[in-house]
Amino acid sequence: MRHGSILLFAAAAGVLATPALAQDAKRLRVQLNARAVYDDNVPRSNAALAALRGVEQEDWIFSPSVSIDLQQPIGRQ
Image (cartoon, rainbow, N blue to C red; front, side, top):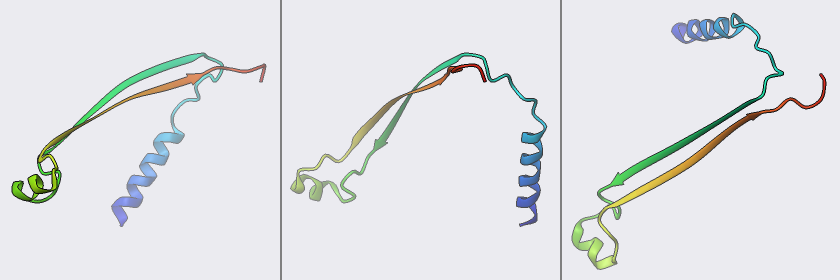
């Protein structure tokens, strides 16, 4: 437990020690991500039972994603 509180204090000190950044700058950041997962035992049974149920034994799952981070100042603040 002691190590956790020291780590939390160090993280908080690091956040408080960072300089303030200007908030009036425009920023656009786009990230493209892709994730592929292979499962070689989808039905969670043997091959004979999977064939009887009509389930494929293996499968690929692809998950593409897009992340957009936009900062646009609005008015004079």
